[in-house]
Figure 1 (cartoon, helix red, strand yellow):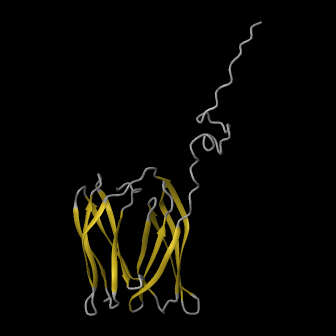
Figure 2: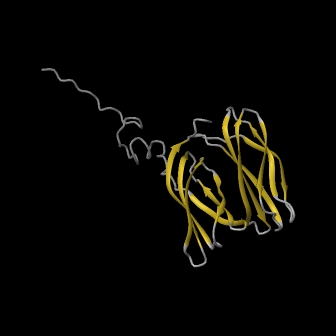
Figure 3: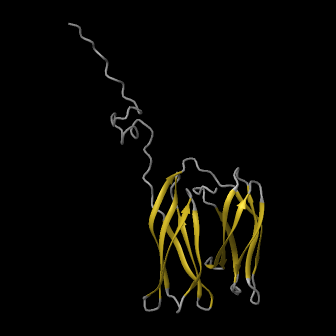
Length: 231
């Protein structure tokens, strides 16, 4: 009779077995750290803003605290209530968000039959997608200008430069204006389509109303959907 003795395979961080004090299979303990659980998106700010008679704009700021995860589709509901706390309008929508991004979501020109007291912006679904090693999109805004006054319509404008290595099907521009208390007093958006590599494109974001409040600052954000096949 012959006996063949085979040595026990050496345990490694690539053997597909949870051993050697690993937190999960092949990660944690003596191996590389396990991927952190995805943290939920946060609604850090929301406000409904009057623009003209019976018309309002809604702005919500959303924070994605995750380093390696974006969301290609985020579903949300918007409910608006009157002084009696009765629901007077509801809406649903979707947006995308990139890793470590703070994003403004703007719902413009909401028509209401009465004055609203408050709005509730709630995230109801998130379709996550891993984007390890994601870097800045290299969308640059220059020549920014603002025009406001009691007798004229309000406007912010600028030039968007596509410094990426790709032609982009659509770029969304969001303009936010702040008063002296750093409260948002205006929020609007526009989009430019088919922005080629290294191309410069002029844009404007307009509001129908004049803004008479004292303005301390404004900002313009550029977003593009990296999950879309058009980009």
